[in-house]
Image (cartoon, rainbow over all chains, first blue to last red; front, side, top):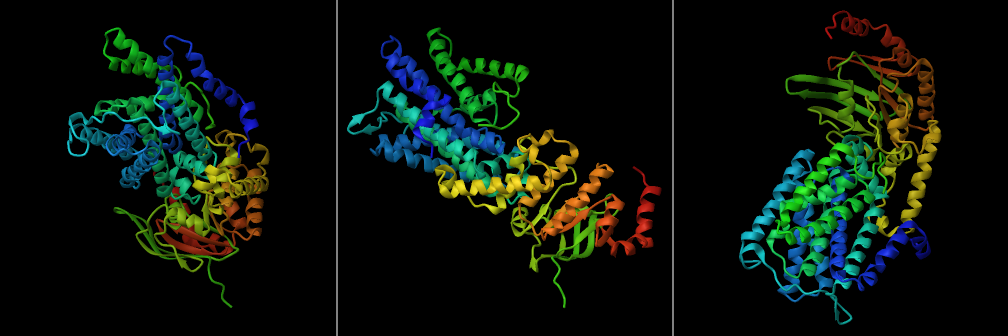
Length: 322
Length: 260
């Protein structure tokens, strides 16, 4: 197990230490809450990027519909908490398991097909979910899938709704996810995934069961997405279908491409940049009376420039290292 | 007293639409042998390897390994059962390190899964240590231990071939299928390869190879099977096969009337 002293003495430990101090610093700033919100959103995207990375980065399969699991997690947790009065601590694991299950189901029909079919199925799946949520009335009640008044989690009687509490909440979720994903990557499972991404047939001759390992990646990736969605539901308090559009999937894909596909550090950095930039743009664009969605134009421009000048990602590395 | 064959193929046929790649091929590989499969280009040799290792589904026939039927067994299961192979055009995991390539080969010999990977418990750490030790030993066996941290794709051609063999050996096979292991090698490298194959046999691993280098084949093989146009046309020890007129005609006919 990792010892506390080794964490604190490493560079990551130092970064972590400063991140923990941010809310203290922002308490003295006028727009401190905005800053905390931007950071929290960035952490959420970093978590999602890690999740997408398990399928697209590690196993090499292009997932174009990752927002689907974000949606499943958000609505599962949102409905359980807002409509059935469940506690967040129960809703979160249920949302994760629900997401993981759908990850398996979505991937199962594609196991015997090539990666192109997988990409198409992922896209179709998320679009299907989006339209169901937008239009159906029985389960979610009301057009456009509004679920309102999702409560924040409570700990020892305190409701953790404040920005600084949300900040630590998502930071902890992010660190736990990073720990799990890092350990998987540097294990027999991670090696099997890497082998699959480089040469499926050669991987099979090493005794690697493709169906089993791909399904494992599908389930874990989806569960992480659902965890992100569950956090988002209580963070946003009110959710509706409009948040879970196809573009979010592409955005998260851009994040791991920006940072460098396949690497954990790359996913984190790409998500930190685009996630915080996205939040900043969303706020400032509407302040400038421009449509907030035009931030996607800027993302697109960044991606094009990346492809032209640094196609391997910001962290240009030839070796798949964490 | 009869010894059972390690690998027994009966009536193996593989059709690709209208093309007959293998037609009623019978052959046996005995345990502890160094056996070869030869024939002109396009004779169906790699197809036979693909059928045995489960990467292709044969059309009809019977394949038994250690007296167990493995016809239609999936590729990963065949590897788990103890058949390993290398590829004609070297299929290493070229973006991974040399050591990691061999460690992936150890997949069949390990069992660590989700819980042990995430919790990093003692079972995980012990198994990872064992895997790394075994991988390093295999790199030493093929004289690549100094390249352990290099990226596999950066190795020279001959070194890559040896790495592929080390990786295949990591799966702890009883039968090793080598697909043109000497391709592109100079005489010195070929001599090293012969020594390597012999020391593999000393580890109680049966070797079955496809080769075009006839000097290598004749020097090292105890039994040779010859294919042409998907059919077995000859078999036997080197002296028998190299003077078999059908074999000579198959090779001469190939080069004389070749249209490629």
